[in-house]
Image (cartoon, rainbow, N blue to C red; front, side):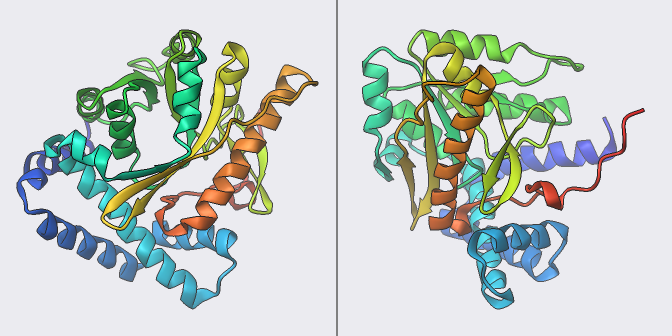
Length: 304
């Protein structure tokens, strides 16, 4: 474990151990100050956030600066809440979550079909997970392995404690963890799977049109829905004042004709269209501080 890894792991450990005991207003103030310092320094991640938001809003420099400030405050609110969630009452989180279109999830599961929920990086994903569990629908998700391994284990323990089944995306030490097979079992059994899906810049990602340019999004949600007959439901998560909000979009329809690859591409494009709508409505809660569009990427080295 490198020194940086130890520092990162220690910071998260302290966050979970301390922030939950700090009065909420004090914690919120501190994390807003952290966000504002990041915004004033205008580092690489802040500039990338503004570049991404420019694609969404088309706004000028002044409006983008104001929006990125709100975006960073939203992002740091997410982390503040992550550290506080273990001490928060799940029933209160459920009561303070304002949902729209939730019947698309509940009615589908009641009919015996599985559900694949596709999510952009918005709002508080974990609070939305608590809402879903408290609504009577525990679910399965996947998580990338973090470094160091102890940090990954802490995140898995945290999410397991609030009712999620967490599968590692890759095996310990490298290689595949066969998560897709387990996800398929869950949806075939009529269960719910939740997957972040608005960024996948690997060669396995599906190219889509997104705010007028090309990017790649995760193929997993569409492929899982096609293979198991589950409904693919895009869900938008955002902050609603001091509470939380989420909008469940209708099922993305599977084309009647085409190859499996063509159908997966159409499903992923439909998912991207729902993400476009939600991000345009809540741009300050979209936490995309990395490169996203293909024409923003550094050129790849040619293969030998």
